[in-house]
Image (cartoon, rainbow, N blue to C red):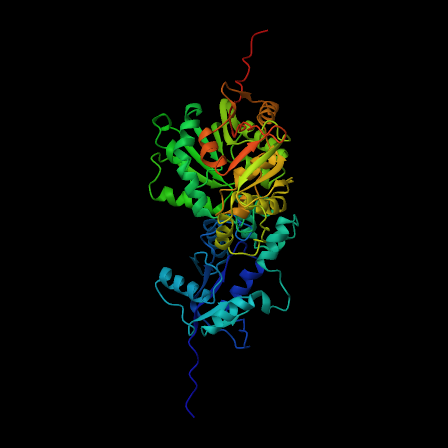
Length: 533
């Protein structure tokens, strides 16, 4: 009988995962695996070559700042390198781009490893360390042996994500479960604070945005198209130095600021809560879009904690942002918190420039909203439809029928009341009797059909001009001349008035369109000069 040829020794232990935390158990297990003290899921011993190494496949490497991936890839990679070097665990780290769930996930990881390492990880010389059954099955289907890591240990160890959740919950037991060098790394970069902020942010979805129903292509294009006009409005009020654009989207406003000769020596910062938009801004910077080299972007939520040190910012701009903060957070309470945070980080003499839509000064005034089209069209449940199908449905509705749909979606998504009494319904024209606030909320929203459900989350009329003055002066700002409400007549003629009119319900006379926007230039007063007593 011919001798049985033993299988080749294992040269690579492929360890795929997001690796937001490295536990003491993982390091001990992987050390035992390299030392030949572990069996695979079939009960066969794993014999590793003397030069075998662990390949940490760092998945979702292009995705960060979300509950799913709170720690950026460069920090995760550095943590793994630090822990494994100190532990004497021979290792390589391979970042793998974030991809949607796919039956070819294992192939994606393997192909990335081959590209980065310059050699293929073959089933003959590689064992996959994985405790997630569904993921392990993908590698098993490719012919790889599986070492079960946490799932195969009788001590039922806590998995890394459980350790992370204990940390978020304030359970100090996470320090005993994580590898000591991982704990030290987290403390050095204050990652524990960062992860808690990401996980406890009440305004952001798991994937890193305010809403899951926004069309980013349309949103970014609309913001960019208006950036020239917006920069022309705010530029005269900007103080050079450290300039911060909160709610920067994809950087359209900062692109204009970067071309301004007055700001050539300034540092320009874009801050946005949306991972998608910050990623697009970073991509634009890499493409050389910004003339000023000192342009920086960060995904942050100022409501959860200061982004800049006190008295360190010369100019803060917020363009079409404050209504989103009011809508997705705690209404005016969050606007007051935002104002206090901006006041704190503004230098004496520095300014906060805010431009946004505005609620009417007399929001409860009852008006007749005259709309083209037939209101005798029942609303449709759009919640389960693909975004494109929902957008097409709303876009096909007449102004009157679209108000019927709005009256269904807006209260459910924004939490605001809608009062509509149809006093006339016809095929050509319908008339809704409603408070002016409701009329303006609808007219501000109705053209954004591409992201209809996202827009129906947002309330545009929470604040009046008087509300803004009281809020800003209440935290210590002084309003500069010219600050206050104004009416965008182009917006009235080309958006609000199209297929719509306002009438007095008693006299039938036209009602003047209210102010539509607010521009405030709020200055932090200079510190009082001490005088000799």
